[in-house]
Image (tube, rainbow, N blue to C red; front, side):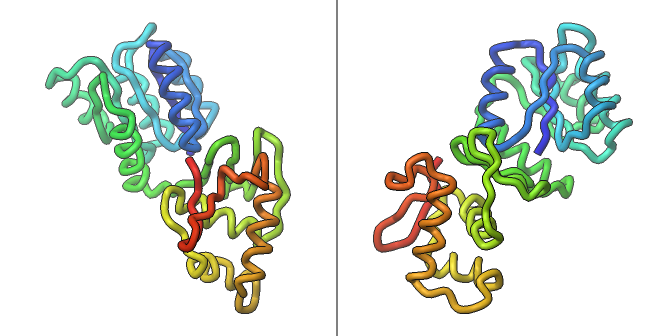
Length: 223
């Protein structure tokens, strides 16, 4: 998911950029109206986070430009101002949400997911640590270097990343890769598939930090 972050507080830019990138988002930033409008004409974004007060211009003008270029793209305003006029003005211009600073990061992420879901934009990038899977490009990278996985390994990894933070049983994994494997997947075969995948995606396969074993229960993807 590609995010346009228009904010003139560098500390917020740095913190939000790191947070969003760790969540698998691709982030483009700027602090002025003119630059933001130029980015909107040159790149396609899935969502925009706009501050109202900018170093040059304002977020309302950027919102108007965004709605001209991509009418369906959700816009969320981030601002220190919590007055009723600014809230109403932003929503009347087509923004889907309005969050006053300081805000809780998890709340922002949740509201972004809701906005993207309502806009019909499904998640295409999954990430954990320095590993990223881009479903749009069918590409897996680690530390920026592309990894080459078999179709079965790719499907297995995608299932793991789609269920990050959840307990994943071996039965879940069998169901996920059944079509690719073409036959019933035995415990031994599943062990081999996971071992091969770990050898490609883990920094130290002997001590995995991405695909963790939950003894007696299954697996879990680390943060």
